[in-house]
Image (cartoon, rainbow, N blue to C red):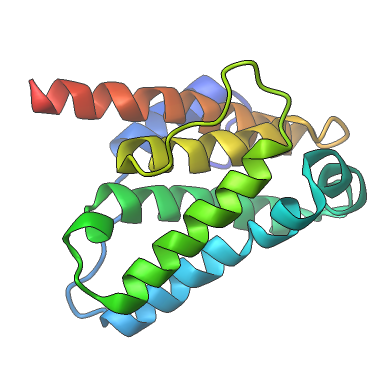
Length: 169
């Protein structure tokens, strides 16, 4: 996937690949990884989009860009898996509330005409994770690879809702 330079090609790859959460993976390990992905929202939530982009994201290396890309996909897959709604696990509920709070704060600093999404809806939450990181990566104008990954995340986010709507019909 990383050999392509076209966001559309990456989108096709993303549709073909699905995160598989191994049954042998303990909930504690999975929640630790989910928590780490949620933690990535803290800086943009605390500083705002423009400041975060100018002073943090613009200094990212390729490793940081790939980390954000992968964690966005991972977090979206975890949310879509239904772990949020079906889990009675208190740690899971705390993590999802942390995500909603951090994403809400981070989103509020974006210049969007639509207003803030309803983060209580899990489909919207999963899509918003992808869209937020897409905006960050696309905004890294000095890093064409990051922009391509950001465009792929944005296209994938738009397809997340249509996939689930089709499955429910």
